[in-house]
Length: 175
Image (cartoon, rainbow, N blue to C red; front, side, top):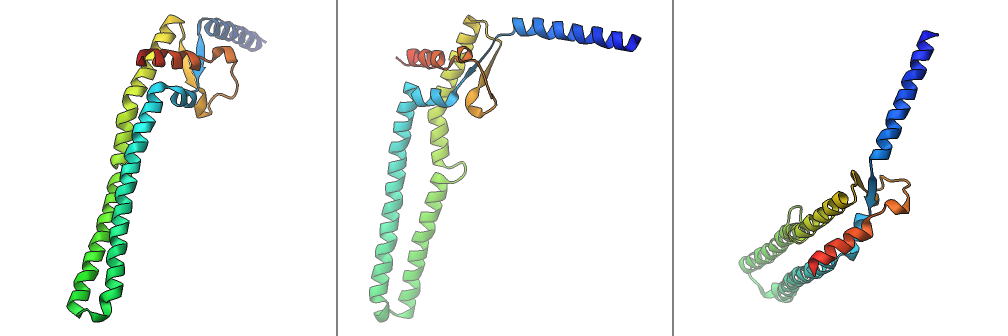
């Protein structure tokens, strides 16, 4: 009986503690995907990255065209070539193929130029988002901000969503 009373008292105290804690803790959430999609800086960064990507794709196309030209030339002349010239031409073609593969890996491989450029373009944007989040959180006395786009929030009141405020703040800073 004493154990039951103690357990009931402990449960009541825990309930009151959680209730008081919940009232003093202000929580909000954002949709980082929406922020990235609607930020003026992100739109500009995306345009710059797409321009870079087009240039890299053109370089790859130029390499492909050169390889194809060498192969066609080799195929049309191989019947009249000496074995030594055939071997030399095949090595040249293979060297071009290897150079193309290295170029693609250097650009689009793990930690390649594309990933580095993307990080370079996004870094200042992420800093602006963090600064805006901190400013809004301090102004509104928000204790915690969650990211709803990561799938961790199953339900939240729309009134807790500060995404549009963050977008407005980072776009204000961009002007």
